[in-house]
Structures are given as C-alpha cells and as structure tokens.
Amino acid sequence: MRLNDKIAIITGGASGFGAGIVRKFSAEGARVVIADLNGKLAAELSGELGEQVTSHEVDVSDGASVKEMVDNCVSRFGSVDILVNNAGIGHIPQPLDQLSESDFDRIFAVNAKSVYHTAHHIVPIMKKAGSGAILNVASTGGVSPRPNLTWYNASKGWMITATKAMSVELAPFGIRVNAINPVAGETPLLSTFMGEDTPEIREKFLSTIPIGRFSTPEDMGNAACFLCSDEASMVTGVAMEVDGGRCI
Image (tube, rainbow, N blue to C red):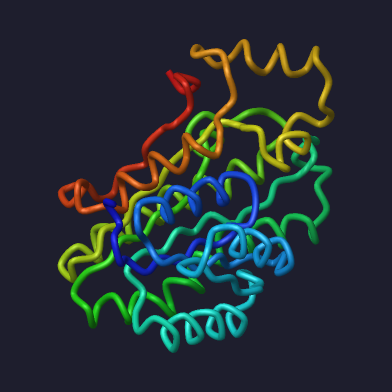
C-alpha cells in the first residue's frame, strides 16, 4: 500500500496507459479521480474498481473544464497529493509539411497546454500543503524521434523539458516532478502511430525494441507508482524511459 490514502488525479485515465496507472494506484491504496474526456468509459472503470475511485468528465485542453474538475476533487477529498498528466493524442504518420494547422493546434492543446492548465490549478494546492508529486507521461518520441510524427514528437519533447523546468522551480516547495517515456504499446493510439495495424508493420516496429514487446498499461502503472511514491522522495526532474531499450 505504497500510496495509502494519497489523493491522485489521473488524466486520460479511462483507457490505455492511464487505466493501467489507475488500477495500480487503486491497488496501492490511493483514492483516485479518473479524469477523462470519455466520461462514460471513466465511470465504468471507477464503478469496477470500487468506492475509492471516482470519475470526472474533463477536457484537459480547456482551462475552465480543468478548474471544475480540480474544484470537484478538492470539495470531495480535501486536497490533491498526486497529479498524473497522462492525457494525450497523436496523429497519423505523415510528412511534417502536410499536417493541418487544426491538427497541430489540437496536439499541442492536449499534449502540452493541458500541463499548463493542470499546473495552474493544482500547483497552488500542493504549495500550500508543502508536498506533492506530479508525473508527466511523455514518450520515447520526445527523446528519439521517428520520421513523419514530427509534431507529436515535438509536443512530447516539450513535455520532457517542462518536467525538468517544473522540477527545479517546485523543489523548494516540496513538490517533485518526473516523467515517464513509454514506447508504443497496446493502447487505442497504437494503430495511429503505426499508420495501420498489420502483422508486418508490428514485426517491423517490434524489431526496434530490444526486449521485443510493446509497453503495457501494467508497465506504466508500475513505473508511475514508484515515481509518485515516497520511495522516490529523492527523485525529481527525471524522464524515465520505460521502453524495453528502444532509446539505447
């Protein structure tokens, strides 16, 4: 029970890596708010996991929506101890000069500006408490970019830099900020990153991962649990690669 009685908000927690983090945090004793644009899916998962897990429909790219979600969490639980910025979107692989401006804006609104919105409303709560842990779910794409995903890669590189900058600024307030960099995994975004999901494309992609498999939601849950627990009290500003050796 490494997160016993901790209050955690996990964005994009209804599916994929986010759901893996929700399940792990719940199993380790945290009270979890599943914050997701898909309110129905979030409610289904919270119902499955019991009373200590609740859900809230939120658009992380919208500041007012994030504020409402945070206010609801504080009203119910009294504080926020852990924030996991997991919500994110990608785009179909394509040349960087062909991605539409509207797609570019949406990618940065969800993958980057959402981190600003959650920090704007949650960091003051953590400062007042004198403690807190923030985890940003970035990507190996922010460290070792792949062609035709340039603007997605750039958004995750932004997230990694933001993590390091936040960690330095917030350390005096007792707030730790880290990131994890998963490689592509068995999530709803997998087919988006690969362009299409065929055995041939999967085999080609897996050949770049030394361990020989995709990341799983359980992998992300385990790494996130460590970084957000008191066991990692001396760890801040780290972008941990959970990628089976992909970035070596």
